[in-house]
Length: 97
Length: 510
Image (cartoon, rainbow over all chains, first blue to last red):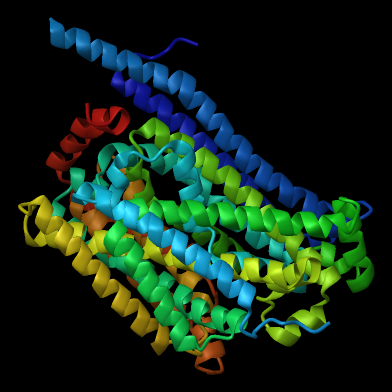
């Protein structure tokens, strides 16, 4: 993946990731809430002894929240921070000229 | 089963005194390090990511959610899980949209971010209205909760409990500022997470460490309905409305946002949200286990016999599996939890009053460090007195809706203006200002017109506004006002200022 070097490009990449992850979190969470609201019998279906589908999905929402957060940190620690370092380096070169 | 709950419990009081003593030692240590406004508000920006992750979790995990969700699960099973999830899902949003830009653009409060690109005086006044409204309702809910809880747990009179919380919290914030408040949050978070983990472990030990065995036993005793959605989510629109307020409100709570200034840079802020999200998710999963544990091992009748709302489920469970000493420990942890949350709220209120209103608006940024610190401490004393008075004034009132209201205002007044000021170049001062005022006023009016106030509290026969949670109306309204006003009366100099700040937004102050 080519790393971006202008401020505009870094900014655009950062917001693209932020917005995509935000939408993903909202879809998963509100999807769960709407399922609870509109299809209670489905969520009451037992998956195994002592576990309903609703409970499984609920725990999955928490896992998705963790996963998306982890994914963002990983992306930012590598791609975003690298682009920021490049911007700093470019500014330092400008300054010393 | 008879319970010693509500009688003065020597072990609970000893544990609690140990916590107070330890936290006052921390405060004394912190007081020597608190020499400037920077120390007072941000702990010298030297908090590590792991420490801030714990402190964020400490600020956020209130006794109301610990005892309340465990109680809700104990009484209604699955439905409690919906709340557990709602309290967590705001954290990824804080991470993606807010934490890093906030750290890079501001100094002490979230209003700094808005003031960096818009006209300072009107924007800080509007932001203070939203912040102080959130803090006031959150504080009242915590103080009334403290009074009731401590009466139930320790047998202390309500007024004495409120006064003790107010005075001890005042000591932390007044002398130790953010350094003491951060460490009190960390100690509290470790105690709460440790206590809840131990309690869940003792419960699961009774079921051969099988969650499914616990849930099966609950279904056997109370019917399989406890494992499936019940009556809590009866109105889908209201459920989505509550969900929106919880999710976006988390990203607009002034005392949470303020924590991002205690770390050295945006990267540390980012990592700290990762830790906080992990701790908070783990904690709310535990409350689910505790609720089912209480349902099976203590029984619903025994829980509602002590408190109809089920709030005593977790302490009763502690007594059931660990005897009086463990009840004492969990009671002391619950008390410590309230103290820490109240301290965090008071500190952020003091920052709003002194930094946003006095130093920036009244004095036009011409106050020296000595004056800033003095005003911040004066504001702390004022807030402590106000919170004790409000705590006593609302004795016996139903304040359960106030936490929801605080989240609704945070989501409607603070979040839209903050997120647009970070993302959208065309936002103007008038747009942000009107959005914050409309968000606050709409939340208050809609709550007042809702069944919660009109039917449950005022005993009227009907309510003008059908929903109990205003978020689904007030949040889009606030966004619409911000965008509409900014587009109708554009200010090109403010859009240029946004471009100038873009570098700082990503790289911080170089």
